[in-house]
Image (cartoon, rainbow, N blue to C red):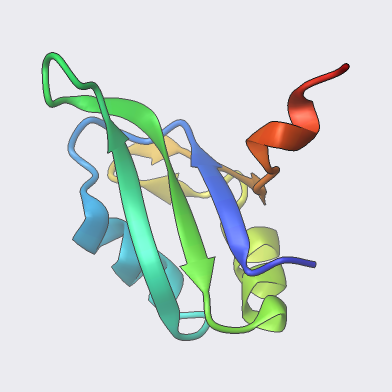
Length: 88
């Protein structure tokens, strides 16, 4: 298990701080980042959270997947590396 998690289904109201606070109850958060649209500056509806320990990431994923954050049901999965998605 990795420390980095993908979080989908985010509300436009969710920001880095509220994302970090939601995951912080399960362990130390190294980084929480909501991905923003380059042109509009609005949330693209997903983000990434990096926890300090793989065990904390596993617990957060189990507890928060399907839960509500800022009025939206979120999906939490293990993040995958972009390069692993490219097929040669």
